[in-house]
Every structure is written in structure tokens, then in C-alpha cells.
Amino acid sequence: MAYQPLPFRAVAANVLLAVENGQSLSQCLPVALSQLPPEQRPQLQAICYGSCRWFHRLDGELNQRLKKPLRKPDRVVHHLMLVALFQLRFSEQATYAILNETVEACRELDKPHLTGLVNGVLRAAEREGAPEPEDDSSRFSHPMWMIEKLKHNWPDDWQAILGANNTQAPMTLRVNALRFSRDEYLNLLAEAGIGALATRFAPYGIQLERPVPVDRLPWFDDGAASVQDEAAQLCTTLLDLQPGQRVLDACAAPGGKTCAILEACAGLTEVVAIDESAERLPRVQENLDRLDLIATLTEADAANTGQWWDGQAFDRILLDVPCSATGVIRRHPDIKLLRRESDIVPLAGIQLGLLQAMWSVLKPGGRLVYATCSVFPQENHRIIQRFLKQQEQAQLIQIEAAWGRNMDTGRQLLPDPDSHDGFFYAVLEKPEP
Image (cartoon, rainbow, N blue to C red; front, side, top):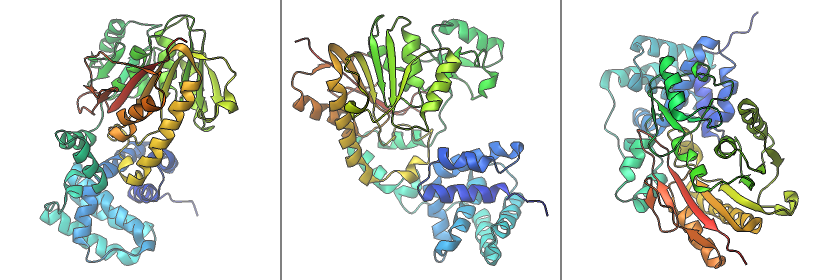
């Protein structure tokens, strides 16, 4: 008998269950997509991202409708109903199809004893509409700890941050300045029928009116452009790159900033890109190859300089540290399920340790740019404050820019639903002896 793949709603339920159990969408979704025929894959991806984006709202509604939680072995059916609720609330698919196919998916998941419950819950949800959220977690569709932390850190902006996190991020490109000017590439996009405009702050950035597959982008396979958020592109404007410099990109994977550095200054002596993930480094090389760029790739823990440093100091260092990623939730909505409040203090320790290690390999007269995609001050300007107390000779360079907010020891970008992600930057220089 031929193998029958699961219906895509059942596959989506298994993906949500995997995320709840600690896997990221980037880990479990590719495997799930491979289980479906090509024509169903875009729908599966949209459902998985959307269900994570609105998980806390949908979960709040479902918990109101269930008299008691499902047993742990039946937890996948809870997620199956979340998928159906997402489609009822946020898609234009016919209601009868959602209900009937979800009940069938319940059978395919080998849970026939729960088909009556699934049918009853979803028919009531369709008939009664969405209930009033019972708490802020349901109302804003974020974990409660994150909402409280944002209220404390950003009392005037927390609702705007939460709202931005629940939008779908625009598709933004970085034009390869070695190949085209931004205006030239805008013209190529116009000729291809792709609506686009120049970004406000990143000098090589272009934001598309709507996302398109990369194979529709002119000369993409030949290295004309890369997909990269505007906030992430700003690193090259802060490094003050000059020909002849040796540059380090610490924590480099997947390599977008490494490539941006090489594109921004053609005469660099060497760019060294370090990442401790052996699985992610090949992605860096793929990006370099597509753009016809050369960097020295090293698999290592950047903080352990004895493991990889050759004793030759760097003129410039970009330190984009591991962080809570709370500035890029709209691109990675599974962060709402994966991140815990207890993660923040250990991350801050890693960030400060990396900063101290990178300082030791920075040349006197050199510049270090510290970056995160977080909106929490604990990972951002407070790390720089702590570092400056330890390294009194370090010079803080004030960032004079039209973007972000001055945080005394750096600039903070909050996520903007119409343009960039949330990001923090600080610039430090090591004085000459």
C-alpha cells in the first residue's frame, strides 16, 4: 500500500507542537515542508508563521472554549484546533472546508476519539465569533513576561512595539554596491514590474512594495542584491571602513553582514568571519559565493580567542552578539514561544564576555561596533555601560544619525511596521597608547 502523507493541517499541528517543545520554525518547518507536495508548501508556511504570530490570542480563545485541558498525549489536537482557529480568524478560506478538513486531520493523527470535541469547539467558534480576550497576553498575543518587561522598559512605546511585532515584515534588499548603484537597481526592478522604494536610512537599501520570490529579482543569482533588513544594513555606516583594514565579523552566520562589509569597501586586506555553528557556516559560504566575495571563515567560539586568533589585531570589529531577538519577532514569531524571561540574564553575561574578548583583539586606534536585534536595555546600552566601567580607556563614539533613539551609550531602533526591525548599535574605539 502506498504511503499517504498527512493532511497539511495535521502537519502544521505537528510543527506547532515541535515549537512548543523548543524547536524553532527554521529547524522543524523545512522537514515538514518536505512531507507535502509543492503546491501545498506556501500554505503550510503561512499557517505555521501565522499561528505562531497569533498563538497567545488563539490559545487564549481555545482555553476559554475547552472545559478542561487535553491530556499530554493528545496535545497535538490542541495545536490542530489552534491551526483551524487561525484560519477561521485570519484567512478567507471557506468555513465548511476548515471544519471538515480539520476533523479529518484529527482522524489522520490517529485521534478519532477527539473528532466530536474538535467539531463542537470549532462550530461554536465559527458561530459565536472571537470572544473578548481575558488578559493582555491574549489581547496583544505575546507572553505575559514580555509584555511586562516592555511596559517597564518602554512605558510610552510598549503597545506600538507589540503591534509592530504582530505585523508581517516587509521584504528589504541590500544592493551590491560593487555591481550597481541603488538607482540603477531600482530601475531594473521597475522594468521587472516590481514596485520598490529606497530605504530612509540604509544607503544601499531598497524596500519592496510586496514580497516576491528571489528568483524574480533581477540578476539575483549573479550577486546583484541580497535580502537584508534595513536596520541590519546600518552596521557598515558605523564601521568607518577604509582600504587596507583587517576586519572581523564575530558571530557571523548566516553572513549577511559579512557580505555587506565586503561590498561596502572593495580594498579591505582581509575579512575574517567567525561562528561557532558548523551547521550555519556553509550558509555564509553560499552567500559569499553567490556575491563573488572572499572571506576567511572560521568555526570557533569567538569568546575563546586562544582557540582561533593568530595574534594579528583587527582594525575593525563587528560584534553582533547572540541575544533575545526581540527586535525581529515579526520575522520570527516563534520567538514568542521559544524565549523565556530566564534567558535574558545568561545572554547578558555572554554578551559582556564577548565584548571583553573582542576588545582584546582590537588594534589600538581600532573601532568596534556592538550590535543586537533586541529591544531590551539589559542586552543593549546597559551592557555598554558595564563594559565602560571595566575598560576606562575605551572611548564611546556618539552616533550622529537620523535613525533610532539616543540611549547615551548607543542608539536604539524600535521595530517599525512600515520599515526596519528593532536593533541596537554602539560604537567604541580603542585609543592609541
